[in-house]
Image (cartoon, one colour):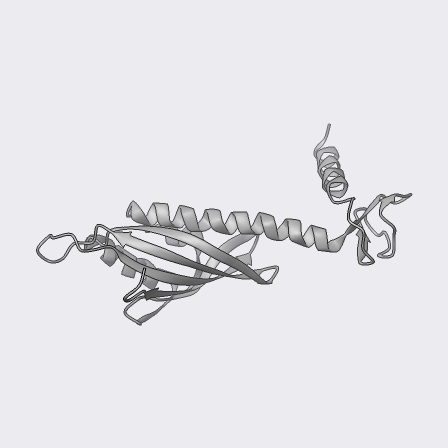
Length: 189
């Protein structure tokens, strides 16, 4: 089987996976088929509901975004600031809990490099919501906890809890952080 045969099989599998959808907003899986085509087999292929395809795409993108966040945190906890090259857009910006705006991936990377040297601790995060503004732009809301931070005398400080808001954008097939806003939670959990 050549490459195009595999692609055709994958396309057919996707079409069959959403064939149960029934709505007036239908399109075709085959090239050039009309939007008004009914669900089911035809001379030109199978029709499907575009809403289901969008939902499938959002679910895949949400899994990818969640994976990106997890990989970024894991690598940053290990002191690997090269994660910024893989996950942050070149023109990204970051506002930390101190309220300072840092613009540009290289400046953000330097900021985190300095934080890593000062024993900034380990971060865990929980993504509570991903909301797609467009198919290529999404917000990520979540909470985080940093443990293991030490004061100037080496004494471990209590855990720091906060919230994070990320704006991510899909460019060239990859999701990148373009804006991050961090805030500390005071007097609560």
